[in-house]
Image (cartoon, rainbow, N blue to C red; front, side, top):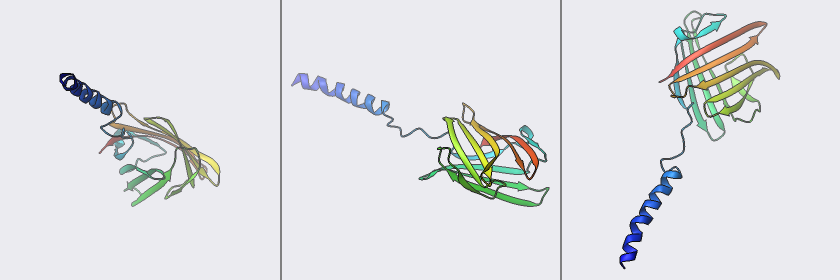
Length: 160
């Protein structure tokens, strides 16, 4: 009987250790998820000007990553929303509200996503989205061409 009493605390400790090692706290949260706000003073847009306000929202759905970019541009007096949902399989998925028709995503690592945009099936844009190791900053680097005009940006966003 005394031997069984000694085993109980050992089994409890082993059980707790197993839960911790197996991720009892739940699955690791994707560092992209959430809402990010553009820091215009830290960002560059060629050609300019930078938008007055921009937010990027990342959500996981059953079909992949849903990305919404909301931009307010006082210079042009309008606001736009760009939306897509894509898997990390390198296949093309439709985009609404943008100068590109489709987007393809590839997950490089937990903090880096590469994206390729196409118009009429022809690649017209490449980009990289990278979350800083501390999870507080998102840097989006884009290079492309739209209707004969080359553009590029380095957008620095902070978590809301």
